[in-house]
Image 1 (tube, rainbow, N blue to C red):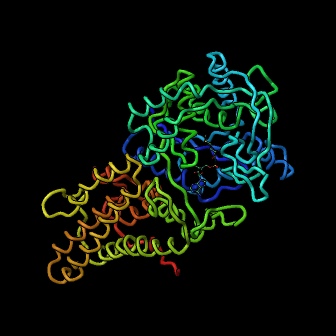
Image 2 (tube, helix red, strand yellow):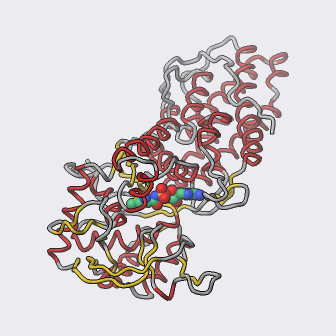
Image 3 (cartoon, rainbow, N blue to C red):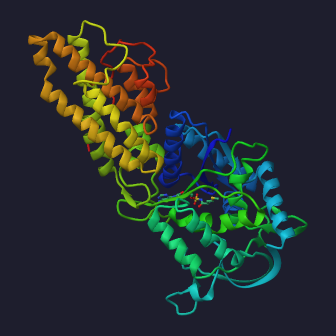
Length: 504
Ligand code: MSP
C-alpha cells in the first residue's frame, strides 16, 4: 500500500543546524504525526546534502577529509532532529551508495534520452551558491569593476569549462500545463504565482555538472566531471524510495521559499525527462528573521535550537515555530515574543486550565468518570468534538497556524466555561451537577490533548496522563480519545505544572 510520503529538504552538511533548519523539519514532523494519527501509513524523510564545493571547502577549513567532516556535521542534524522528537522514518545522506547509484542512474537516463548533452560554459560563477550567474544579473561593486553575485553578494569568478547541460528549455510548456492541470501542485498560491511568471518568461538550459569540483558524484562515463550538487541533491527524494514500491511519488515536498524554484521547476522537469511520476505537492514556507534581522555569519545571530529548548522545552519550541506565523509567510523570532506566547498561551490558557480542572476532580469527585463521553445533550464535549473536522481540514492544507487558532479558541472557551459554571460552588450545593461539569471538562481536554499531539507530543502525553487516559509516552489522538480507548480510565490527578511560567 502506498504510503503518504513527506520530505524535508536535505540540509547542507557544512555547518551546525539552526532554527531555520529546525523549522522545516518540525513542520514536516507535525504533518507526519497528524497523518499517522488519522491512520494513514506515513513516511517522513529528512537528511543531509553533502557534496559540492561549499562542503569541500568547509571540510578543508576544518582540517578534515570531506567524508569525516560530513559524518560529523550530518550527525549534528540527526541528533538535533532526535532531540526535537522528529519521527523521521529515514535519514538520507547524499554520500551514501544508495543515493549515488540513483543519481548516476537518473543522469544516465537523461543522457540516453538526449535531455542531457555536453556543451561549454563561459561566463560568471558564484562559488558560494555554486551557480552560474548571467552577466545581466551581476551586481557591480562599489569599486566600479568587481562583479558581485546578486544572491550571495560575493565577488563572482569568470569560468570557462566543458559542462553537461540539461534541456530545461524544452520543458516550459509541459510544466505550465502541469501547473494548470494540478492546481494544488504548488502552494501557497502567492508563491506559485511567482513560479508561473518565471516559467512563462521562458526557461534556459542549465548546467548540471562541474569539471573542477571533485567532491561529488562522478558523471556516468566521464570521470572528469561530477554531477552538479543541486541536480544530485534533488534526486535524494527518489533515492530513498529505491527498492520499495510504497513511496514514490512523494505526496509533499516541504521546502523553504528560497529553494522553491528548484523544486517546482527543475525537479519536475527532471522527472518528466526521466519518465517518472511527479510529486503531488510542493509547499514553500517563509523565512524567520531574528530580532528583526536576517540571520547571518557576519551578525553571528544564528539561533541555536538547543539554547531555546533548554530554556523553554522542546514542545514549547515546536509550538512557537508553528504558532507565530502562518505556514507560508515570513516571521520574526525573538525571545521576547516566545516568552510572551509561552506565558499567555501555554502557561495560562492551557497549563492553568489543566491544573485547575484536575485539581477540582481530585478534590470534589468521588464518583467514577464515565468510560465514554456523552456526545449529546448539554454536554459541551459534543461541541468540542465537532471542531475536529475543521482542524483536520486545516492540517491537511498545511495550515498549522489556522489549526492552532481553532484549538486555542476551544481552550479559551473551556476557560470561560470553568468560570461560568464555577464547579467549586456547585460542589457545595449540587454534587451531581459539579461532577457532570467536571466530567465534561475532562473529556473536552482529552480531545484537546489529542489535537495537540502533532505539535507537542510530550506535553500532550503528559496531559493525557493527568487526565487519566494514558500512562505510556505516546499520546492518543483526538479520534482515539473519542472512541473511548484509554489506558487507565478514570484516574485523574493533578500532576506537575505543564508549563511553569517564565520571567521575561
Ligand atoms: N541543501 C539545500 C537543499 C537541497 S534539497 C534537495 C539547502 N540546504 S540548507 O541547509 O541551506 O537549508 C534547508 C532549509 O532550511 C530550507 O528549507 C530553508 O528554507 C531552511 N531555512 C534556512 N534558514 C531559514 C530561515 N532563516 N528561516 C526559515 N527557514 C530557513 O538549501
